[in-house]
Length: 207
Image 1 (cartoon, one colour):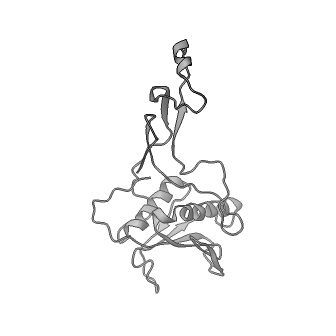
Image 2 (cartoon, helix red, strand yellow):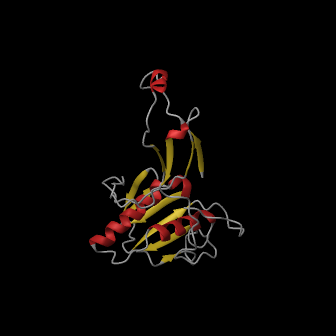
Image 3 (tube, helix red, strand yellow):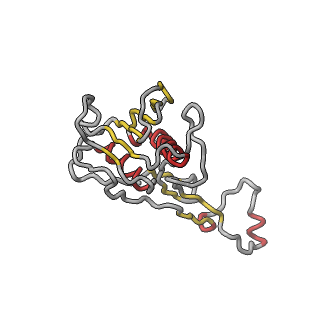
């Protein structure tokens, strides 16, 4: 959770930051879809003004005057939420990988299967650093769009999730952008994290 205070006597505002999934433009840039997935914020809205006395009007110095805190109300759009276990078996996954897996499971209900730890010649899956997010009907327009949204979502939250890379439909993505082609992965989005260590059992995962 990030805590911010507005200047002066106006108000204290608490808010959380979360990413949202959007389709990719050329070059891996996210394009808004308007579905609001994963977004959250608090907004400060001026309350409906009441009658103002003539004495009060005389005290006003101009349009730059601060509005008293009593005339503001804070509207909570999305409160922080605990993330329950997701679609992947979590045994052997590291904490950043679990956070990604739970976040994808919560935000994209279309996803019904996520692979985690498994034997592999490379260390990512055996060491709990990688996920395979299986896409329903991956060759359809809807499936491709869903995969694009998941790639955009993890890249937009790369810092929080500890994202190393994602692979989808032959393209290797990093937080710096697409880095290469010809990598397969046409039926699932592969996501690799930096891990963050193995869980102790005391972790709390928050959306």
